[in-house]
Image (cartoon, rainbow, N blue to C red; front, side, top):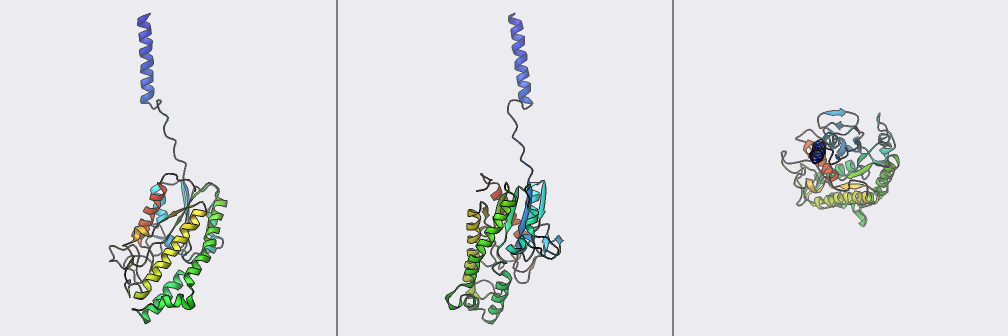
Length: 293
């Protein structure tokens, strides 16, 4: 009887050991749900000029930060509807042959990135105006004088007016995809963090650099505030890009100047800049508490 009990106990121990070796001792971690990713945004998202361009109408690259992020995450599905020139209004209206961007967001979407607002405050107009005025007075501050005439800061007012427009976009994303995690990306710097800039590579006058830096930071601060009150998370792309502005040598810069040395649009991220924004987004995605705030 004692031998029989010993054999039975030994058999049970062997079975338990086999079960543990097979994984029966601890339940495996549950598989991550299939990520269904939609990217919304303007030309800083789409990546104009960066090869390979996959949508000429929207100047969209397959090496922009959404594409790099999607490949890194190995998502189950990926839809990039970012488009050059987009404003918040283009979330609801077609751009040429491209449908409204929000149509890509559905109840099955699990991840949405948004980078919008720069064109709502007139990015192209700002750079063109400051470039034209800077050519007439490269050592002065003619652009600052233009935008702050009569004691009013036109660009600050535009940023304030854009805030509810961005908030409306985020509300629409949540309505269309209630369970999606939403991330709002800021804009990286064109000018150095200090100093007068680098006229004529960036055609803004030396005295205008502080004002334009402050305007860029004000825009990003608005995007952060809107994200935080709209159950989204903000991704800082400005801070990591300090020292990689359009005034740096070609091998060091992530933003291109008026005459690009790397394939990209003037005053836009190059391939390295898109890679850097992807890295900032991936780092944010990896933080604990990935759910909506």
